[in-house]
Length: 136
Image (cartoon, rainbow, N blue to C red; front, side, top):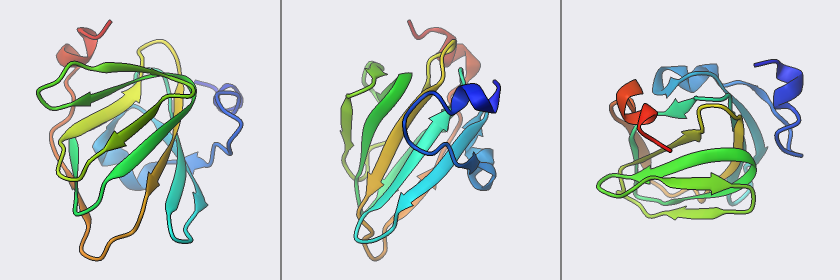
């Protein structure tokens, strides 16, 4: 997808291609760090069809605030949730989950986390194409 089109997905800065975490994504995403004081806030923009691997936030939760396009969020053992701008998702610590764009539209969310000593992310298996294609 053209970067100029991705910049229109939300009013937040698109940022750079998310190459540091590319191993944990299927498709291309972009990351813009908006704040690091007391709470880390990043704008994450997913190209259509892009999603991150299943993962777990150990020791601290995360909040997603959807700011553009449409996406998916799923916790292990639960049905996927379709997300739109204005939706807020709280992810408790130790919950295995994934999130990303719908197949035919870009998606952006703000990811918020409060730094906690000893907290970490565990990246797990990818969301397979077969699993992803079942989403409607």
